[in-house]
Length: 306
Length: 289
Image (tube, rainbow over all chains, first blue to last red):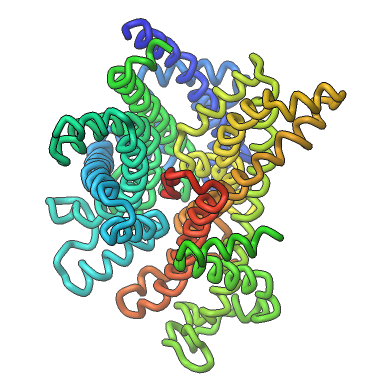
């Protein structure tokens, strides 16, 4: 177990280097002169030259990457071309909003999704199962931005129960979290149902039933623990996807998080911001996947040995 | 083509009426997309006519007009063309690339294929929408970069899916028999191994189409897809969203079209999987972006 953890953490270094190289190259693959992009459309030649020198854009590419790595290692992600504010400060300022949104959406997806999936698996092909199946087909097929607008139309405009946008109290959380979470509720429900159906046909479940355990104990104590393993792997993958979805949801609900910051950066062609955001997202996803994999090897010791 | 009738019969016998409906919806959208230039010419779909701005549905304008007075039904039909073109081309290209990478990596199980598959794992753990955003930042927004971005981010899904079956098929008796008759690697791979994963290709292809339509519309909603005046459902919703409260039809029409297409592709994908592998209880995790 310890060996496995050390191996996984050692692999982190080359992974992060590869990610930083990819993100660094993004800035340099963008057509046009980065100094000119930074200066804006109607800048003087002298200003462009000044910017080129200031950001070291006249150096060879490998040296620029070297300085970039050193800067990033010191926590300097550059500054926005527009606002002149350091990108890292802005990321740190906006991080709590995104964590709040993504965290509650994930929590909602796991609790409701797994609950629905397990319920559906207890009586396969019953009307309950079919109703849950229909809800999850809806959930994986509705585009998040359309769902968000519909919920806003219904609960904020027509019924006026909830605030339409912005961040604030609990009421502000309900619509964005539901919008972001629904597709993942559906996904977790589908996966939980199918893994539970597989687990429930195993011999040890029959044994547990044969020794007289009640249905509930069999389902929750014996079956779900074993079905949890594939679900935990999914957590890692879907955390990343959830962050991707947050980009759209934050745009709809004017949520002051990282996703909106990145979209604004793309639209304004503020490449330092885009670069910083992508590097930040990538690092977060790698970290979460590491934690999930380690958790996974605790749940299923065969992984670490194999 | 010859497998369509048995599939439809299977859907009737197993009472999958929703999937049957999905087949019908896909056919309608595909026909509309192909016949778009015959149904409405390009100017009808893009001409600005402020006199009709936000018109409600009428005989002349069956779905009303958007905030620029453009004919909604014409834009919807041309939007189907955009969505299906982007999704079709990107999934087709990704499928071929994935088949090649997955097939070769499964067939030649060596160090190079190990490294390639680890690279695929790395790409897959990164959210597709962010990967697409990164590529579009490089290439600039537009239909081509949207298609390319979706294609590239789909390749690892196919490569991983196809490698396993190829790995197990290549040591099966019928392949070994063919090899002993003198067949070369390429002939074995393309004539004997790949035809045996055709059903996987069809099932994953359908689910991937649903995913591609969703991601393409999401990116277009953010303004990273085809630029105006090209009609695209996600972009239409983004442009009209400020009129959602007063004249909801300008947002509801493209939204419902998008939802119906994605739902149909998912339902048909589920139906196809049960059709090709009746024992399977597995359900795809779904197409959430």
